[in-house]
Amino acid sequence: MAVRALASLDARVRRLQDLEPLPEPTRASLLAALRTRVTQASTAIEGNHLTIRETQLILEGITVGGKPLRDHLEVLDHAEAWDAMVEWARSEDAVTPFLVRSLHALVMRRSQPDIAGQLRTAPVAIAGSPLVPPDPVLVPGAVADWCEQWRLQAGHPVQVGAAMHAALMAIHPFTDGNGRTGRLLLTLWLMRHHYPPALLEPRDRKRYYAALQAADGGDPRPITRVVGHGIARTVTLYERVLGLPSLPAPTPVKHP
Image (cartoon, rainbow, N blue to C red):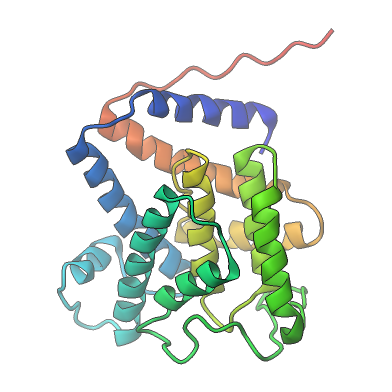
């Protein structure tokens, strides 16, 4: 994401921050809307077939006819994991391998309980990517190192969060559920740095996967753009709900 685009995003986020604290009904309704939208989008990226409306019905306890049971279980799991992530974002708990595994356990609790919270013990390939994730023997150490980097990383929160997300996806620590868990951890990072979640939608799937592949090859710019655009999408939702007008584009910096 270009410097100018990051500056524009930062200005929009600062404007939202200046309105804090929001009235409790407004804050609660925004979080509830994001809970449904992020749950639908993140599971749909992985192949879930439910619409936003169907996802909301399931979260209200209503079964949607004609859709697989696994689709129902995935959105229930993700919403529960979202709730835990929001609580962790409000705390100062360190991001540890145990927290990463605990979040994965929630993401997979109903849909694939046999692997929930368990680091993979077999070699895997990533569909559509030439990257070969580390040998399973190396995964526990790689996750521990990733958590240590979380603690030490410095830089622009969007750039760092995007790079950290790509690094975890390259480790591919779990047999399944890596993307859903990784995107929740990205949200945790962003919220702790006072940014709203990045709403990555199913239409972003091709660009998102290509950006992760570029990051594997040493170029973090595409994944930063994808994450930045996802944050901007969420900011737009906030602006519409709060009735905020559009901000003018930032003035380019002139160099001598």
